[in-house]
Image: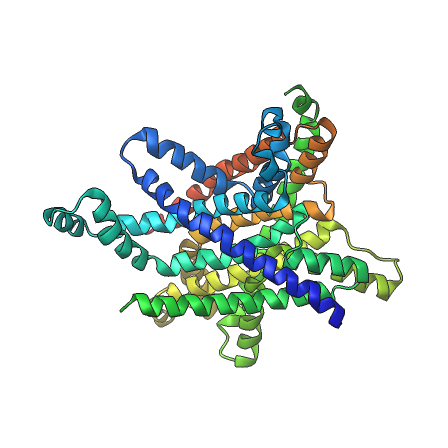
Length: 217
Length: 226
């Protein structure tokens, strides 16, 4: 059993790395996406809506395969400098997971932006704040606080989504458990991985609850 | 594009398997979820708590891991018990795993929907002399159904997308067929985009269906005029 612990431990670190990096991409891209979907000009809101429909309407597995296997179809890309990065499983998993998460996080964020009372925007404008300053100092902090539970929930969902990285050869927690399970012909490593996921999501939701408590001051 | 045409029959066959699996899980998962909701509303803690913990555990584990555990675990158990005489197919393993995942979310949502029907209505129905079974069928169920429908649509969409995971077990559904086509023709992007389009199409077809169901379920409710 002890020799089984080491790969699972390493896999857990990979899973956490995937979660952190893809969440960074997801949360960062979600803001411009949410703003774009709220834009008055169709030229901006329509492509954003299309992006959202694609990433939320198709399986994550398709998106991961499109990035990892699909991009190889284009010779121009294969001969470009970007291929040094894109031919590896790690960056492809991160790109797919991050782009996917952005579409899901943008939804509650959009709702939060819409829920900020217009009087607060007017007040900020009356104080002479520019559009960017209004967004950064007034609207965004308020919107994020309004929908923080929903944003935290997306983080928990993302933890489970990272398990799909194992389908493109990454040895995350699921990948490590699959390999151990196949070599030992036993389901135990997979069950152990399940327990570790439960522990991780419990820890994550506790951390988010702390953050919420701090934000409600 | 020519290669895609040659494989369109295969992709269509895969799409049929995907739909078959999704609908099977919807029916099984909904029935299980209903039982789970009933159990979680039970006054007895001995019934309530195991269901509450079971669903909570299921929701904390990736669907993919549950799928692998169910399929490989069940194969092994059956293999040892019957010495290889009985085996489990990827379809059966996938249907079981995705159904219990669906049920774990559905039970929570149905529980909320049952609780959301005002108590006064149930008491009024009882006061009018309706039997408990009549209260359930005439008053409680139709209103819980109305409240549950939008999240049921959400869960159906997740379920449909999750069926793609069963391709990893070798089930020749839409995703697996696309992979085979991608490998043979060396046009992975074309084939995976085709698969993605098919999933979008399924959702595009099921959404109006849910809108129709919702409109029907809401026919007794006055809407605030805009």
